Image 1 (tube, helix red, strand yellow):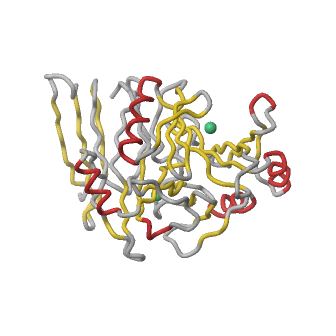
Image 2: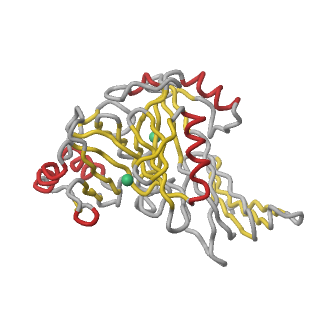
Image 3: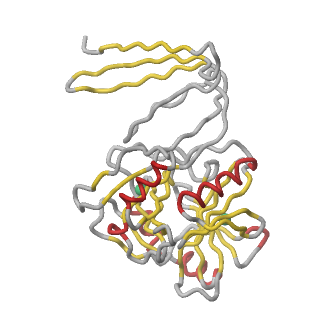
Length: 323
Ligand SMILES: [Fe+2]
Ligand SMILES: [Fe+2]
């Protein structure tokens, strides 16, 4: 496989009933910032960092979690998920951000509590960065007038420059985000979050499987929202499902990304908690799946050639590993 282009991060949606908590009131499309979904190696160590930064502990949900004003942070994915494949830097979401009332005061307090803090760029005193052991990068900015000591502020995307207008328009159309600018950057605002779009220096790859696996939005009426998404031609990862424990609606949207691979590259084996389909956009590639049905293991190999050209062909072989 070769050839790349754009990687999209994954978004999941939760109905409002699950977690309004300290979320900001939704916009006219019923949307507000929901959660960061982390795939931490050490839940306790990460929880300690966030609690020291001013988070409240959340109990009773499906995941171990903490909450800041404007965002819930789920600290783990489903049981059995492999460890993160990388930090935020290098993925389509370079970092996320909080604002505090006074950066230097917060930094002094956090350092004393063992939070890994780095200074602002070029000696800026109104900026700092927290980088967790799993390399979740969090920018800290200052807003002296905000009501809370710390609150959610932004999700900072790094994407190819040419697609910034499309991404900005997509969030506006899909979630009612208000297009605008933040500093030098194009941006879009939703309650509780500024989505900031900067030009990527290198290829952008999906967030899926990394420390920040995806971000989530809360919506007021998920069923109606899903119908509207589907009517707009947005394919859903799976139909609207209910959380068996809470009865709340749960729905990750479908994601799609393309990645350029070096010739003869072999990727690491990985496990999915949802369904995944691989396809070669240009060139030739081979995928191998191992799966289990009952007590039997199967190996499936698919070879793709030049999917975008007339010569497209696919060969598929299924091997029963029972013998
Ligand atoms: Fe999630
Ligand atoms: Fe930022």
